[in-house]
Image 1 (cartoon, helix red, strand yellow):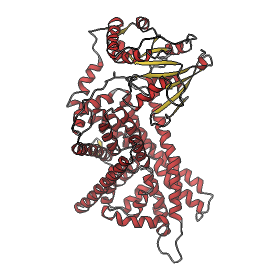
Image 2 (cartoon, rainbow, N blue to C red):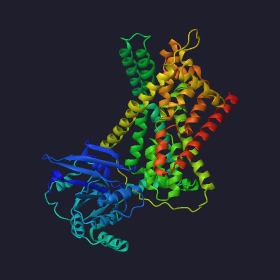
Image 3 (tube, helix red, strand yellow):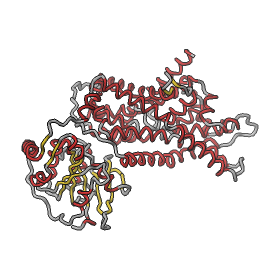
Image 4 (tube, rainbow, N blue to C red):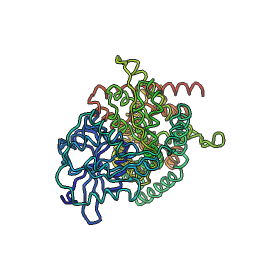
Length: 614
């Protein structure tokens, strides 16, 4: 079998470094999509060898066993057995195993060998294993298993050289022959292998042990987690400011240049100036903050800290009707609720999985960040507290904490209402600590930036143009004294909705922005920019949106809108994923109704209380 025709499948337990190895082999030559008919992510890339040949590499979802307990594991099982529709059967399996936790991974290795396919075992994180005093005789392990065994360090530049050399070798012929073992026989075989090929330096003091003594401490560990989260939200405001100013200035200069040849009373000038640049510009400016937030999430994930945070929070989440395993999907929802909801597939218990799905939209996703930042910058003074902390960052931290607290309270109510009172213990692997690799962080940030810009260029652009049309037509009648937007379709809708939202303190401009915001939360910012650009005075149009709303809104209104966005499910895509993951219109409808009810009640209580106090 020639290397150029090889189709390789990377497979292994979660947290084995499989994706890091995939990124190193394929670089930018990779495509990410979903498997047909399911929401399981599919990654495929091409490795270009030095001799000019190309190897197709498929990164399969992480799995602990071929006896699937989740959709991810079911897809991996079916692809490996050649039973998944539309997916070609892999020629060679590359099983990636964490050398620092070989006992756990060997059980899966034995299952894969029993498939009878050509296979190589990549022992990843070998550098970390040696630092921990773990010695693995790879030659003996290869002889015992009957398959090639290579050492890899996925985060190192040349860490995959041994694997690449093996993939380029011409000896992929035939199938391995192996007897399928029972579960007890596999356990016995693993114990025998560990005794034969692995030795430990008992005197080695590992950094992992010292770090775990701190991070997993029931009191100090929670303190460290709180400090980490607080630091992240301080950084979101402080670090992003120069880049945001640069984007604002760039859009202003480009907008002036693009509209300068056009008559200011023309429809095209209004579309570009009042619609596109006023709308999209107010969303693009938040890209630096979103990338900073996602950078920290990636660092925590790549370092191995996230599973420990899940373990640390298990007791608290257990009392609320969740498990520590829900922590990672909920943390993923800080970036976007959609991958967070999809990540609940790792929760095997259907009841716990459903609860996590229903509370995931309460996590403060990055789409809320533009709204929060706009309102905080407009109404919260930029000053320091205790000589060190940014007051705006403190408010942002409180909003994120409000989302977390709300999710726990909602989960507790669901636990109290459900009939099944059984509880489930948390069983999960704690991977070795490792330094995040800049390449993998760069891939993650680039992917997030592409998603955001795709939304800006697709959904947000389309809705901004549509909103401009609604705000422009029909024009004002003869003798009209108010702004033309008051007589437009959008103005009529906004004034009608204002009666519904009067107890909440929302004006008609906010009501207009909430409607297209159903497609994506951040559209509300571009919608406000378009509405105010078309309804304000010349001085108001010249100002930035934050200055405009600071002049025209009351503080209670701003606080009520912040409270609204803590709860409101203003994202059709999130609702669609809830429907797809649960296969239930009833569950999706329940999520829509309860989130909107919470949003309205929270906003009304905030507005009325603020009016009374102020």
